[in-house]
Image (tube, rainbow, N blue to C red; front, side, top):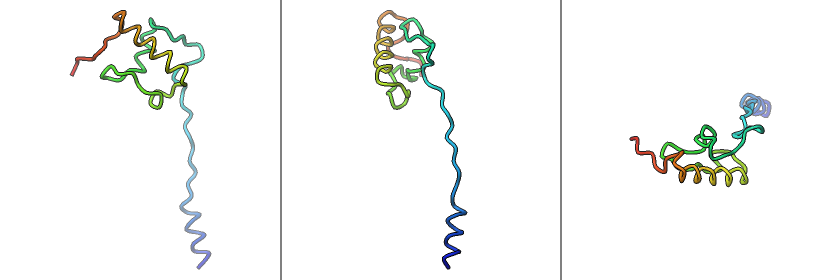
Length: 85
């Protein structure tokens, strides 16, 4: 009976591999209010700033991105609200 249980456990084991994700901000990329291609990656469809958990940024990067998104909105580079529905 013990051998049957051991075989069953060994059959249920799975080897899982974690996929390496790209960093959201590459080392050479400059976070700036004029870099709209970068800033748009951290804004939702409703023009909300994504959280750190979703965007996978560090806390320092998140503060910087949020500050520059707000600056870009004030300077009319980015919309405050997305009206397209």
